[in-house]
Image (cartoon, rainbow, N blue to C red):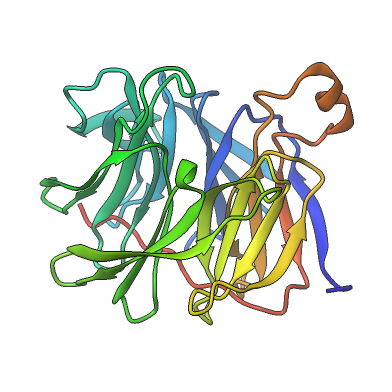
Length: 297
């Protein structure tokens, strides 16, 4: 682990930086600032960042096979034209829960979109108001889970037979059997319990060997877990406490990108964490990730 290095690459102070996605075709990093209501795209070649404003909270943004992106803005799945900055609503979820918002989202290997909701003004209000949905390429919405607190990290095993998922306040990483042809999930079980002091499980990714990398909010770390045993293989410490999500990227997917938040820090904590809200690149891990998927709709 002595070769592991953590570098801040985007030092803009995101309120809640989230949802990093490496775009292979562009060799750029896509991520969002949920409360800042912006989608960002950073180029390691130019070290420049481009942004699109969303006019409401934005939980995620992922590439769309037909071009541009889809994003979760408020409770709407929207299409984003990066060239014109035009944002067009495609479909709404949780229509009966105006106090909810979309949180994390990802495209699955078949091109469906998986995304979930949470209470907008958490931690006030009732518990378990969120849900997990899939959106088919024809924009048909299917609810897979209800009674969710904070729908968060998700990814799929290489054979697509297992779906990994985080409902943050459960303090677990869960696995489901997954049918790649239908997107159906079932047989929920706990893969790993997050331990006291590790923080709250947030965003997550899998590496090419099928191991989990889980960003722990209020834990200042990303933990590497073997899903077969629940054993922690590595812990990557970051110079900020509110680590939010991670993805692999770079030309050979050997770099881990980690987003963070600054919202919620008091004045003293902000002084101690000048890089809070930055996005980091972790190198020297000795593992590689996998390309992300795009939404087919």
